[in-house]
View (cartoon, protein in one colour):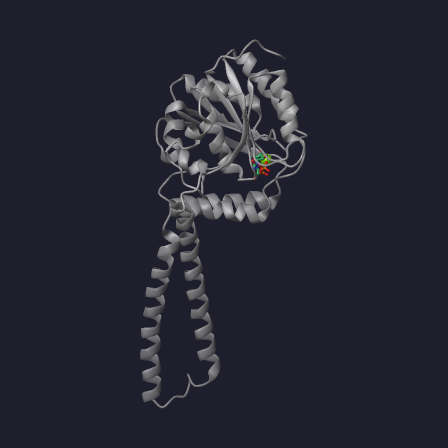
Length: 329
Ligand code: UDP
Ligand code: MG
């Protein structure tokens, strides 16, 4: 549906990160356009190509030709889902920005409800999954475990069962754009910025086509990013464990002395020594590893690299210099 020349500043920007979603893009555009046109707000769809190696970028160009409200930010390589969302927010011009997965697991029809809450005055409206279709038992179980853990050990109250599907007012977007950390956990960061927040329930659909771009390895990385960016608890674990084991060893020393004095030979032999040394060795290595997780992230931050490299941006010609935009901080 070709439209007349798009207004430079739309009211609402829809941002979708795209990594090899050729089978989905036309349907995504169709469903977004249907919802947004029915809403009667001016809008743009910012597609962030996160280094796809299928026909995604080509299809994005076709969609842009067809409807200039579709705009493209294309990375020089794959930088990851959370970074792609960040770039989308850097380029989005709307008074409100809606983050949505490209795979249609977040149904565009829910956008109407997000916008309604925004019009009521809320500045962050997150979508809460009241049901998740077509996800494996394993994913549901690990996700619930993870959110319970992060709830316990972090200071931010990330609402249960929310993903990145949410609406952010310009105020919240500008606040988020000042947070240039490399290991990003957007669903936590968007709570951290504050403002008036509320949720809207929805049913998370099955993926429209293709398969998940989040294999277990990436899920674990993502979980670690979430925990390390909002909590020191893992670092403190070594201290707690140290006190506990030191306390235990004092008891063991007293018992050993007592047994010696009473002439018992109960603690003689290699096995007990070996087990203790291995146990402590394990704990020390784990503690070192935990420090390493934080240290690596600190290293990534001090290098001060840009969060992403843009290969091309299409449809933002009216916006001035792209470099300035990504250097938001
Ligand atoms: N995605 C991305 N870069 C990546 C991995 C994923 O931009 O490195 C996009 C993907 O195209 C999709 C969204 O992020 O639009 C969520 O990914 P996916 O649906 O695979 O995750 P799941 O829903 O299975 O957790
Ligand atoms: Mg998905």
